[in-house]
Amino acid sequence: MKDSEKQFKSLLEQNQGLLIKICNTYTEDEEDRKDLYQEIAIQIWKSMQSYRGDSAISTWMYRVALNTALTHFKKSTRKGKTMEAAKELAYLEDRHCTSESTMPDQYTMLMQAIKKLKKIERAIAVMYLEGKDFKEISEILGISAVNARVKMSRVKDKLRKIIKDYDHAG
Image 1 (cartoon, rainbow, N blue to C red):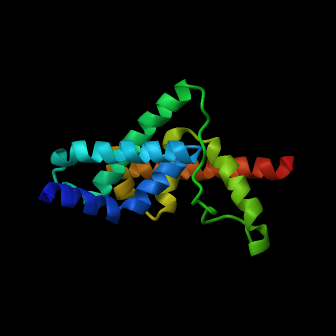
Image 2: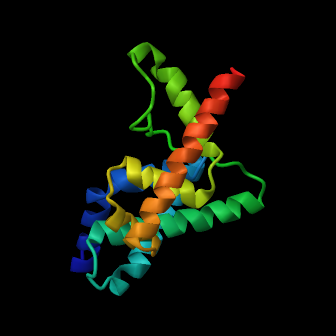
């Protein structure tokens, strides 16, 4: 195996969790997740030579994966598919869940709320909940850190309102 192939395989293994999260966020079933993961892997392979080292390799991979997922989502939307929210997101950091018995309801509300966000807002929420700082979010999305912070604040406000409306409707 060539060095570039070994490096590629190693990068995929090291960042598999990140790639799977993105796939889960932007697909609705297992078959679509597998297809998207494969497409992301192909795009990373094709783009490896363009990596300049300006940011961490994981940041660069996240950017490639996110752009691939957004393109995949656009294609799926044109075909009339709906988008499934991230399965890994259990709750917002400021949620009102006080006991484990309420977690399924909170999770359900969060998933419904995330489904109502615009695709870029979903991406920001996922990155934020994964612990990415605003500098890294900004690098991935190609926006300023201040803009990323403002967008995340707006996403939080939207999610709070959606969840509050959900609470009042139920």
